[in-house]
Length: 576
Image 1 (cartoon, rainbow, N blue to C red):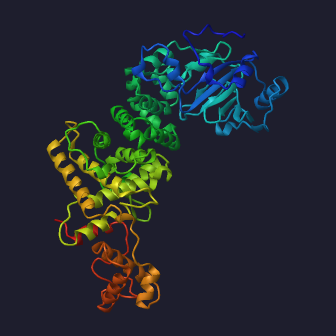
Image 2: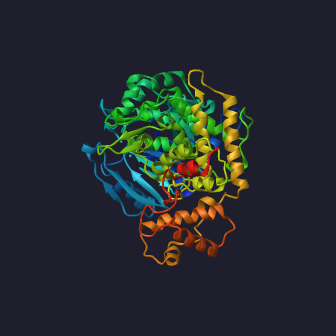
Image 3: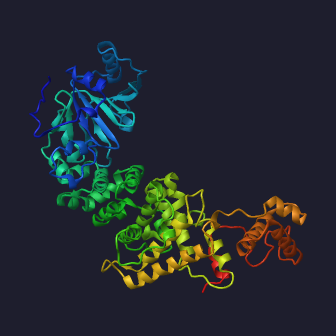
């Protein structure tokens, strides 16, 4: 068996045989030139299991996403074709078509790679890398390289040319827990930094090299450190925290990292195990301004200055407190708040919206003089996130809904109509943006509570907070009492075609206004029939309160649903 050129691994740990499919495992072990495996995704080791014999490796490799680099002793200049040739001619394993991706130094792609498919495994052949960086980019300028691929839904294999050493490769990784090797002959995990396995056991996030050096080489590693810490509940060493707060490194985050990569990392944090911990780390490391870096071309047009960055943590903490079954100083939420499923997409959207709380209510002006929410620019420009998880369309809607639903106290004889129209407001409930009236109401409560949080004392006025929660609980109770839980999805009892037929007119802009009045009647008469609504429609038309042909005809609350319609309904429906 080939030996490690630079000494033995400082620590080893037996790896379960079940990690690799048997045929792949044996094929790798029977040929000396393929001798190392490198797991970059180390898995979910729970600190609570610390000290329980036999559980470390089981937990260490019980992962959702694994990527493994297999280091080869020698690979030629065309690694993809050589890897496929080895598998087919020497091992008798059928491979798929080999595709080659040429090197492109202008795009910082210094190595040729080759791809093929084996046992439904996508393999990418590339040589082992040793990187150097320029001062203004996180993309390496020199690489010594390898085969990477993914075992269906399990992991990725990478085959490497023997240019560097395992120690050199381990030291260039972002974190010690990401620098562990797997020897396919001994089937043992090897820790060349001497810290990875112990940090894994202790739940520690640290860099193999001094953190300032690591972060200046690649500032994205700061954000990746936050993600890994929040994903696994690990603690950051103090040296790493100090380096992350370094103004020079934070400036490099803004200047050297593409916004797409920042968005990808933040998306993973929000979908991860503990998005609140991620936001807490971003706050404690003073990373909010570096991550949510609004383009300087639009900041002069802000309607006002953003609030304190720590308001993001306040909002996220409040959200967690409200949804937690654990006791808190605030009253428990009305059951309607938990009547829907908070799936990963919904939860990610809510927490990212909380992270953007400092931009609540702010607008900027575009080149044509049109105002836009700053949260929209933060998602589109700072994070380059689109409509996935309804970030770009759903989060601005959450903030708009929070304005519509603020202090939801309704009274008067038309309160059923007023509440129903608010719930049907496009920003409050809209399947096309992922908006649901329950989550919109919850976020409105979160934002009201965050507005009474004191950043100086890092505390919430519990007495005022309890009154706010009671107000929103009363609102939900009234929705339940008035049987309005399905009002947001209610179809008009008369269609547009029915309205046109009943009034004997040609369809036009007036039709939408007439349908809006039909919805109002329907909310006021929950037991009303289609015939009764048609008779009312004719009577309203005869009295001149619903016109045909005038886009603005109709009564005082006429008008098709649009953003802001809910606020109008509150004014005219009778707010106590």
